[in-house]
Image (cartoon, rainbow, N blue to C red; front, top):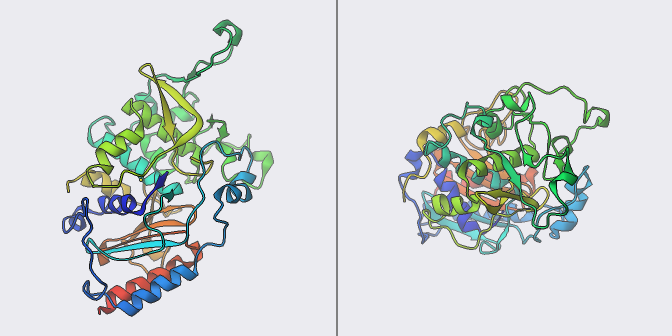
Length: 383
C-alpha cells in the first residue's frame, strides 16, 4: 500500500483500546502544540528525532533495486505489482491526540509494506463485527463461494483446457480444510499451495531446499510463520466474503470516517484479478513483498482479540500487531505497547500507557529501541 502519514496516524489511533481513544480523535484537522505546550521536554525530544534521522536504513531509496537485492533473490521472487521509490527518513509524533512533532516528508506518499496487513485485519474486523464472519474460530472454507479467475483475453475453448481447473479453491486440500480465520489472522495456518504464482514455500524459504516441497505440514494453529502468500490467501478469502473491492471497504468503513487523506492507494498484483458477481475485481495484497492503511470503527472485542498474543513462540497478535509482551521486543517501552510494522522499517508505535503514537518510516530496525528510549524519556521528563 502507498499512503501518506496522516492516514497512517489516524488509522493507528483507531486501533487504540477504547479508553485511550476517548480523549481525542483528530478527524479532518490536527490540533498542534509545541513540545513545551504539550508538557514534553523539547531538548530530549530533539535528541530522539536526531537519533532517528541518524539511523536511516542504509538500503537504497530505489526500492526496485532494493527488491532485487533482497526478496527478489528468493525463488519466484519477481515483482508482480507496482514499486515506488522511497523518500527520506520521516516521522510524526502524537501525544494525547495532539501533533507535537514532525520531520522529513510527512506529506509524501510512500509504500508502507506490511503495515498494510493491519489494514487488512481491520477490514476482516469490520466483517466480523457486522456478522459476515460469525466466529474467528470458524473454518474459512465454510464461508467460501467458488472463485473464478478473470481472464480478459481467453483463448480457444474450454475443451482445449480439459484437466485444468476453472476456479480457485483456496481450501481444497485436507490440511487447508482445517484452517480457521483465526489461523490466517495469526499466521499459524501453514496453508499449502500457490497463489498469484507464489508458492507458500517460496516466501522466506528455509535453507534446506530438499524440504521445500516435501516437509510435513504443521497442524493449523500450532506453529507461527510469517508468510506473505498466506496473507494473500486471507485477502482473497476476505474479498470473497465482502463481494466488493477491499480498498472500497477500507475507504468507506475506516479511512473516510476517520478523516484520512484521499491520496492513499491499496494495490494488488498485476495477475490478481477475479470475477465477483460478473465484474472483474483485483484482490489486494498484505504488503509490498512482491510489489503492490469520531466513532467506534472496530469493536472492543475485536481489538482485544487482535492484541492477544498468538503463542509463546510468537510476538504476534492479529496481522500485523507486534506485541511487547514482557518487554521482549523493545525493552525501553512498556509491555502494553505494540506496533504495526512493515519492511523498511515502517513503524507505527502505539503506547496507551504514555498516550503516545509515533510513526517513523525508513529507520534501521536495530535503532528502534534506542529511539523509543529517547522518546519516552522526553515524555516522562516534562518540559
